[in-house]
Length: 367
Image (cartoon, rainbow, N blue to C red):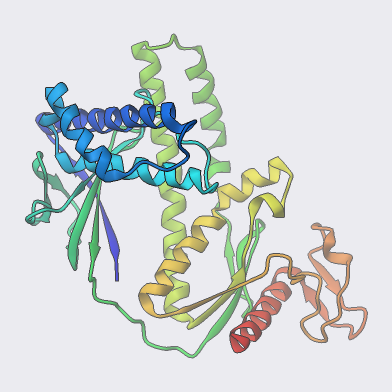
């Protein structure tokens, strides 16, 4: 099993300078060969061959001596990222690759592990060209290290993600329990057992502070020190809200994976669920996609089963007791309704969760 361990790091001044050099060199190599690819793209639709570009990289280093000051595997990884982006574009999977901007506050590079040059050493992490960098995290990575991604977020904080393989699986004890989950905005999640998890709405709570900071930022002169101060405060507030949401989602997803063997949920698409932009903003605030992603990889780690029901399955419109379908609940304001056939009194979200569970178990039997 593969796993990634993320640490916040605290580099000294010399290490920060070296990181900045590596960020810039990786961006330069990416943009340089992207420019070559774009100039030849009209004649040849094929994606770049990494071997050919790697040979050119040796020549490029002889032309620009400062490229030799950084980790060579970081430059090779930049070429690998470019090849992936160009290949995906050639297959019609993504848009055309764009040049990386120097003004982008989120920066990163990836170094490959060669001869154990990436190690965790008791609250210090050994990285190529940087030496040992201090961290406060006591989590020891398991398995064999493949690479490390060093990043700096817009708030100015530094992180490293260590990618490991051959990590021993940690299976949870079987519980024999199954659950259906209906995601919403009034309650973040409602289970088929009637449990409700509140929607914390972290973005909405901090919206007034965001508006105030954004107004102040728009009034500051471009490239001034005061503008940088406000930009940093805004970025840190964004990071604070993001950390709050991720902490809540991680705790909830971990609890669900620990307590249920089979987890059934809808395969939601935000664009198709709601064309209303105002409602979409609150859906992104809730974090449905991130919650689903966390459930999926944690289920793989612990040997659980995730079943995704089709997004057009009428879970809210169908009575779970008799199967009668009603159009009353197409109006989102209707939270409770009575079945016209059997007379059962149904709560919208709980009824949807039960239907999702039943449909998921049916799909699991047929698979």
